[in-house]
Image (cartoon, rainbow, N blue to C red):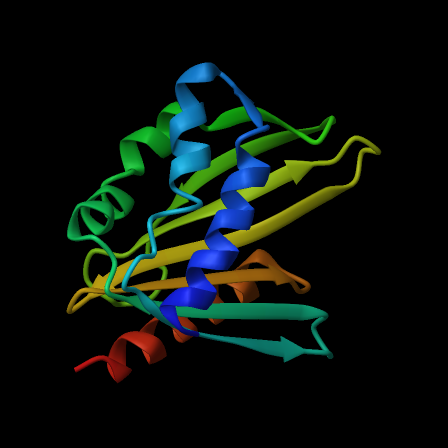
Amino acid sequence: MSSTDLTGSAEQLKAVLSTTTVEPAVCQEMAISGAAPSVDGATAAMGTSLDAAEAASTAVAMTSGLDPAYLGQAMAQSDQLSKCANMTIVMAGTKVDVALTLLDGVGTVPGALAYRTDSTLPDGRKQSMITAQAVVHGVLITVISSGGTTEEAALSRTGAMLDQAGAQIK
């Protein structure tokens, strides 16, 4: 995906996020700025692996050319994730309760950060996903897994994809 395409997508996301509110208010910055970094000059490759038997999906994005300050901020957010372990996000009039849980041992890429996001929708349905991020030689790797029959399987898929992507960066 080219820088132009990334910029267009990021600008759309920023427009949606500008009308979003987060409680506690101290989590607003993390919830919004972390989702839409400046992508000027960046290039990304993305892919998805679907497992029909498990009803699971795992997506990977590898982004190069991001501002080094953003990369440092992205990988140093474990304290902020702990402070924002329970949030309420209101987007387009829809309230979603979100719980974040830091996870250890997801993949073997040094310095990786992983967490589970549990969202409770207004109708009571719950959705969970596992996110892992690492920076390898200036490339931000983000892996997100959702669905499946067990959390252990999601953790395994996430770690395996993170390790595979990290091994591709020389």
